[in-house]
Image (tube, rainbow, N blue to C red; front, side):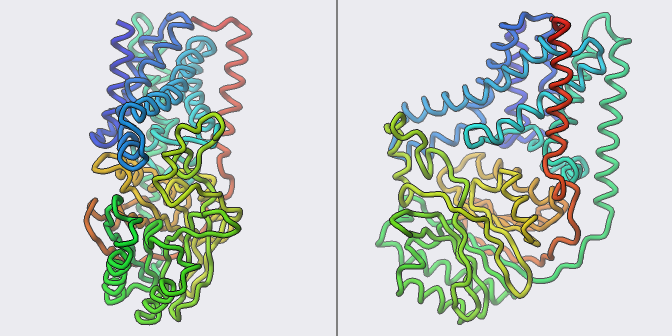
Length: 496
């Protein structure tokens, strides 16, 4: 029965996220596991949690095998093995949550639900940073379209949303314990109050007037096939596609036109003829253009973004800092050299940039994240603290084929807009491109694997949010709270 309950949790988690995206399921998905853990031995608790994770994560991250096998040069068997190893790594966090719940939770029912929510936040927080970070499939992201609920992220970051979701799960699980209905009253009230306050804050935030919008921005989606993207024979056709889409954006009144990650299949800064063509487009349209392009300096490749002025001058450059392990570089190359072929699917083995750049234009300052970086709250916060009034994310999700990956990635980007109450525009090679407002509403959205030009009016951030000012203080508070409760539980021998 315990194994069956763990399996139900794994399936429930899968249904909570895209492609099913049944977000209400997230509020009960942990209930079967928590029920299974009641009076379970510690070792059994760990493996029950890990089992639930090993059912969920391979399903949720299955799109990774497409990138590795189709574009990374690995066999499907090796790709599947890597997926299972990564899934095991993240599943271990669910195992640690389970054993922590059994071993260290306080004696009081109210303390137990607060401990469960805090411990979950701690483990998400650790996973954001440990081993360069892998912040996928956090519970908060199941609620990206639940606008009233996610507004609390402007105070607590995404971790506050995860906290509320786990709090509700734990309260329901305690209420289902036989013969303990009276003890479940305080947890039920606490979870209900937390949910009510969160929704009330969200409703109040959504009712407030939005800041005046200042200028028009366009994101272009070239829909360049990843299989021919770096073929020299297609360079001219690729550039012609972006020229045509950029002219359309200019005709629709865009002041700034954003191209996707590595949109131009050449070294923009170092190839005079190709650079002249992009500069000529900027002069012709009299528009600023943000161009994703690889760069080469000192014998090292960089994944970069360049700002071209309306008179064709190359104004500023940003080199991607937070690279994708096994996609843009191979960590521990001497030990993991057999995976090096995966890095060859891109232009080369990239080096990380050294400075977060805030771009300046006559209509505002903005920060750029490239692909994977937008999923790390600290990376985005650094840009906003540095003076960025709006955010731009350029990416290429063509690696993942027709899968749930683009929708999952968009859900994460929504939270970066809400956390800082700022517009975030996303330009993706094959989709999903989007314009997201400061409340997390998706104002414009493209279909995948189609050309698109999205144009919208946006403004600069009006005021700093609490989250912008204090960062992950809520996560640190949860860490301190769960550590204190866990220490007390350990000293008294736990309640298992």
